[in-house]
Length: 299
Length: 299
Image 1 (spheres, rainbow over the protein chains, first blue to last red):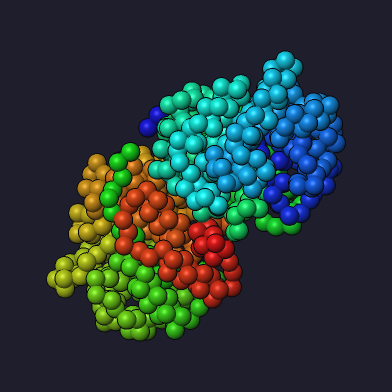
Image 2: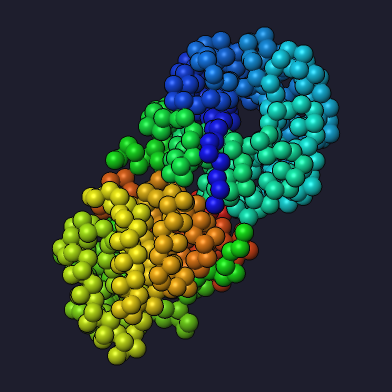
């Protein structure tokens, strides 16, 4: 079995994780979290979202977070922007990389953003144009790639179409997200294969939530297909407001443990990452959502 | 990727699970658990262990459990026996299938059974001989196949040697156990390949604990190698008294969800299995250890 020699982890805990946690840990702790993560060897840390505080109150302090963190050379700190206005706020706050997002499910996108997929893509055009002029890298998220809480099945053709559009618009990387954590490895593999037929594999990332406990197995299947970028959240932070009982993102610690066990380099200090996950869990008032985090603490 | 068309789950919750839980749910509940499991479509349910109550008080009622359950035609109810005396007790209680066990790690076997591996194998000889004469099937467990809490690395050659010995002695199936849940998919795959070079794949099963969250990914890697028997415990029951912080067996519900998603038949009613897992977790005074169990309850 041929795996990539090296995998880049995109740590999404400070954004996708905290955005979906009920408890707000506060600005100072968000800054401390990102600084701790920077010290683990991570190279991509999603720092915040410049979205409406009305819809996502947890991200209302995005500008302060971005202003407060100590940026480590070689580490990128992308932030989510929903439209041109968000892009302007992000840039004013000093963002050097941004991310745009749409669902592969029309029904989900309407509920989540009040816009159809095509409308979302149109909103991103000025973002991509300005980012290009500004020399700002743009990541693209495609959600609900393995199922939707509203429409159920999501046709592979829709996942491919949206991914291809984002890549054609200039996104350097497309993150394929099983937002509700419903997928299994065969479906994850088939989805990735279908997208990789239209968008080069080095421009693809996978993003799994662990609602049904399948996330790490899904990551494994996608590694076997050659993907070399994996999104995850320290301590398994997060959830999904649109899926009852949904657990958070796959825990970064568990992914890194598997990667290192497979002989794949990540550049990450697993002990430091696990300690950060336990520290975050303490702030959130619960046990770490990472099995590795628990096991290393007991060992 | 070619997976087996069908997988047999060996449900080890009533034995490996409960034996390692701190709380004893009592004889009546053990009987109810096994009867509920029988109704899910499972074909193999490990029912009890005929070991010394001095060492394993949770299994002191093994004979009552075996006497109390309603045996469903087509379902086997193996019980663990450490030696000829245990075999006699099991047979007197009406056991139709037994299981013997040894570690691949000499250090672990000494700690766990007060006998070296060769001594353990010698103790099994009369068991296998009598079982053959009695028409009783014997399953063999090999533990610590991916690591040992005492000696660390366990050479693959030792795993192969012990597996080959048990098979040659007459065990119809060898269950390869990562007792401390430390392995990752590449190592699991390599271990299975090494054993399968000496013992036919249809005579092999895999048995993972989820200490480091790797169990389902390990199962996936082994399915890809052709294994078609997987041990698991409903609700992720269990733990390992020899590994601090160790979580239980991989949850049967999560394995079955993955198998069904892969298009692999199990004959199991997942909803009934998940409901049984939640019922058991209630008896144990905690949340189900199965993500699927949680997600289905919330859905």
